[in-house]
Image (cartoon, rainbow over all chains, first blue to last red):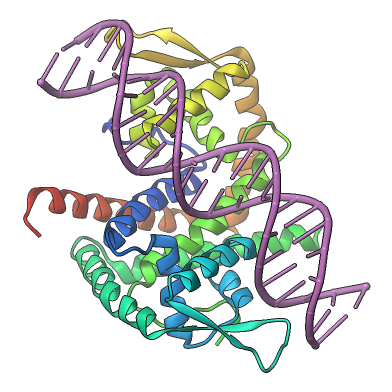
Amino acid sequence: MAADALPERADNVLLQTFRTGHAVRELMEHAVAGTGVSADEWAVLSSVGLFRSVAPTRLATVLRVPPTSISRYVARLAGNGLVVRMPNEADGRSYLLVLTDEGKRAVDAISPRFRSLVAGLAEHADVRAIESALVELERAAKALDIDRRTTSR
Amino acid sequence: MAADALPERADNVLLQTFRTGHAVRELMEHAVAGTGVSADEWAVLSSVGLFRSVAPTRLATVLRVPPTSISRYVARLAGNGLVVRMPNEADGRSYLLVLTDEGKRAVDAISPRFRSLVAGLAEHADVRAIESALVELERAAKALDIDRRTTSR
DNA sequence: TATTGTTATACTCTATAACTATA
DNA sequence: TATAGTTATAGAGTATAACAATA
């Protein structure tokens, strides 16, 4: 048995998600090292950039992060001058996040690191296929969640 | 665009691992709810059961968890009477973890929950294929790690 | 000297609940 | 009433470094 292998088990998918998640997190932390932005903050910052403008609750849903964590991320990113809160004309309870010029510069500086990281992964694995598998797993997890809420199991 | 979809992006594999990881963690937390064992502790406890006897460093490698975290998990599981430390004849600096009778009962009580969780997932997705994809991603991540350490990039 | 495992510290994420402001 | 977002608290994981004991 290899030094890093687990014995066969029925719940391997779950434990493997655990393992792989840790491995990917290490890669991401390394990719942002020295940028002043953490891996989690990058998830938020880059998403704001892609959406152009987005409300916190939307980010929470998209990134699967609790709203309270989003609040903290936003406070930190805003405190660092990377994003600003703009009024949300459609809903006065909310606001929209937008990148500042400094935020855009940060995105421009960090993006290439992730692109080359993914390119590196692509040399060793079929990255598109893996992404599809991850999406499928997330969908299945969500489906179970719905089953649980709508049936009497 | 769906309410929970991200715009297209180059580093989707990484962010998707992030999202899927959160989704799976939710499922696992639900599976162990009320058992007195957390999802992370289950990862350790079930691994001890499968190995029959195993050293902490081995667990850290296998589960990709820092040794300091393993120390805490072991302290808690031992404090709850689920595992015991046995002498490691091969290495006096170390010790071997073994399930107690109570630990075995806990494993017997919790295992079915995870089996039915995976069975539920299997109704919605090709669980074996997903597991393979996760293993492939972990291997690619490890390969990059090695590249980084052995080259001058 | 290097490795195994523990402990301590500081920081981060999460769950929960209480709270405001608006819908 | 319900929802968007914030704040406070407590619990848990991680990184880092220092340490004892053994290899």
